[in-house]
Image (cartoon, rainbow, N blue to C red; front, side, top):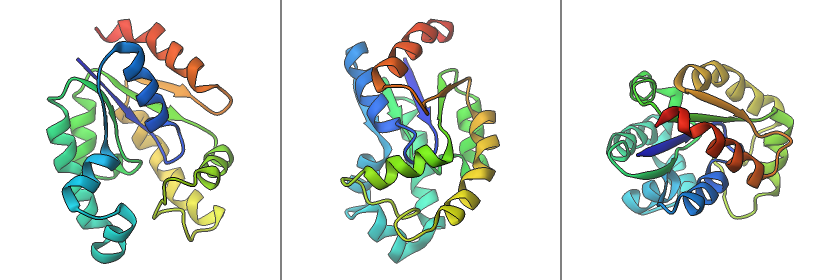
Amino acid sequence: MNIILIGFMGAGKTTIGRLLAEKLHTEQHDFDKIIVEQIGMSIADYFASYGSESFRKIETKVLEQSLTLDGIISTGGGIVMKKENQHFLQGHPNVIYLKADLDELVHRVVLDKRNVRPLASSKSIDEIREVYLPRISLYEKSANLVIDTTTKKPEDIVQEILDKVEVFQ
């Protein structure tokens, strides 16, 4: 069994994925880490050198590989940008969209000093909003369950998933 977490940057995919994997005694497969291992450089450097379209192709390959893995899969925020990926996700029974208000997402990203995010590093809130808004419906269409993380603690989000994940089994 696997559970796929989707959502915009800062929604909590990596944090919730790690905590959920610990609770379920399984592995977390984090897209960012897998992609960095495969491309041999940071995602920010790859974006700068090769662009978003090339990156999205790698993301699709990693998604295909991940669907056979057991555990918690934390995707990248742009996973829903390709129709092919949307179809993969819509065909999977355990896709959870971690959603949050844009102001909260931006706040979390600004506070996150460990992860440099190519999409947000040099953009204004209005520019981030332009990227975020069209994705909302794509996330919603691709997920079986939507959890709003805006005001919740990570531990509470994990418990909510655990309470509802039986629906998927």
